[in-house]
Length: 155
Image 1 (cartoon, rainbow, N blue to C red):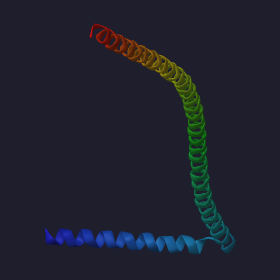
Image 2: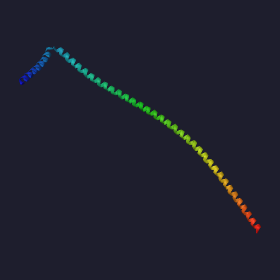
Image 3: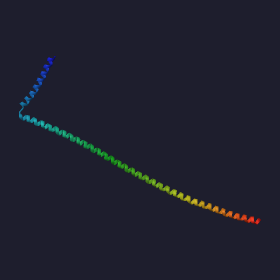
Image 4: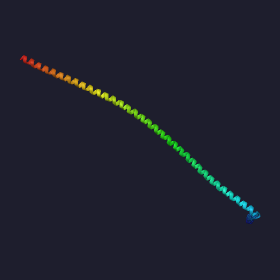
């Protein structure tokens, strides 16, 4: 078995040597202009590959830029929408505030009117009470004087 392995390894090594040697022979067999043309083609292929890589990078940059622009546009739209919503909210709040203020003024006027009427009626009732007390005092005085007069007349 070891002899078979060794001989197969030799055959593989010989075939590799013959392939590389044949490559050199083929290159030697080509004429120098043809070899120069192949080098030019290889150089052009390398340049095409580099250009394709650069174009790919440019395309990636353009894609990133485009996506960035779209995101910025979306953010600007959201800012605009938020600002419109804020203005609408401020307008509604202002309207509600004015309605509350008008309602408060109306209720304050009603309260003031009721307050004024209460004090007028209170004054009228106090005056009536004072008049009643004064009349009572006068009647009391008259009655006391009459009583004294009657008492003097009896004695």
